[in-house]
Image (cartoon, rainbow, N blue to C red; front, top):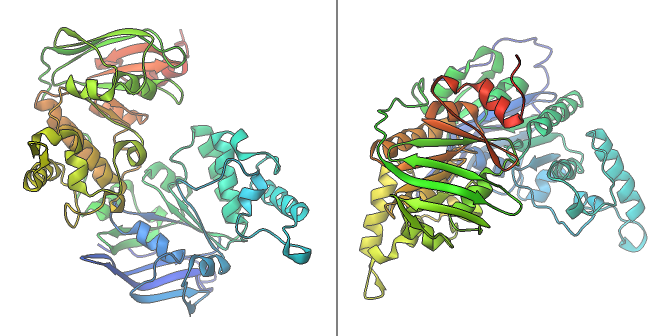
Length: 512
């Protein structure tokens, strides 16, 4: 399906796009990542690039920033063919990228981080610190950031560090700004401030490429959209001409009208009970029960202590007091090995650093906690490893060239599936999913939700930590709301509404 741009004022289209891709093709060994794709980025416009994980978005960004070279097609700047043989050449052409995880250096000052690699120099080639500081003040002022350029980065909060990352990207006097999942680590207040910054960049005539899985963001700030599917362009046009359903249909090649699957609620006997769980600084008085076939949601605002409690329950950190019972018998969980041996597994929010060894292939990641099942007399059996990995990978519909593919080369959604498959292979009784769909596209979200429902129907007890209210409401049988390290409410049935979730999470008393 191809959706073309609506007719607009001819004057607005008289000038060529600042940056355009025409017929771009890129192939890796065994995989065609892009096939004849095009993309137009115009001055003063926000173009949303939409697609499932693995659709080719990251490859396009790397071509735009000179990291990858296309195998075919053209790159046009102001209508003239050009090439970006290196990241430096793309930067010289005014192309900059603000990634979800920008590398900054805590021990350097704000100004040093902003101008790292291209600091202004004075006599004898020495860095002109006064000029660098003044330029840093100007750039920070342009984006509304009241930050001391001499401050050490390690002394700043997360939001301020994010603004420094943006300032660093803009320090090259960019004409094209690429924002790749820029709101993933921001609070709602910080997201609103980012929206204001994008509006400022738009009024300055910057061409902005905005990549996000969050449709509310796309429809709020984008002027144009471009949709990729399986490395091909399947739609582009004015954002006002399409609905969320249209974009989903283009992204996945089918209707995803029901993201949250219907399921039978066959809830069985109690499998997990937690009583009096307490940590000196993170949480206190946590107690609840969990039954077979149940999905128990945990909701709360940033800093509520949900992830900290889950990590303690998995044995990563030690509680100061508390008891855990599995199938009615007390157990001691002093390490992750203890947790796994007792049937508790944990899929962390930060899958890249905590959930997988990205340098290893898929099959080794999946079988790593289950080596007793794939070895004999201390020797690994490769065929058994592949058989076990293939069983769980196929259940999750993971898309990869082979099981030998390094996890680091997979999209975010497929990395998440590898981590889930790894723990399912241990045949657990309780699985903890911490933000299971964070940073993955709507198609992959639907697949994860379907699989969660399947796990529950098979009798597995599921704990789901999520900050997304639709996900909490759509998947949970019961919800525990945490606030400031304590349980603020336990909700079920008609009590489960967006209003009650937010009210308990924020500590707002109900209006009488």
